[in-house]
Length: 142
Image (cartoon, rainbow, N blue to C red):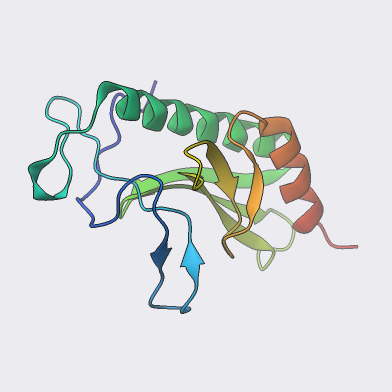
């Protein structure tokens, strides 16, 4: 599995919190804390719990599954884990301008979701087929 731990830089937001994105002035999914293989950490030295590490690892696995499903449907998709966010970059292979980034992050109630780049919920993290269908629908020309 390519995700033994999701190595990212520490950030100030915590799981379950919303953040304001300075680029667009809007709110988006929570920024994940760093999850390290041997020494999990958060800003200010708080330790990530085993449950949070397991959730982030499961989310990374779901993103791998989503990328594979989108590949079967004819889209280029690759998983990115940097800057404190787990995401999949998806692009229509025929029309490269049709592309988007889908994020994995917890909602306010703590349940994990896939999120559109404009901060709307796409599908629950475990519903990869529904997410792939919706993404394919949006990124396919009429």
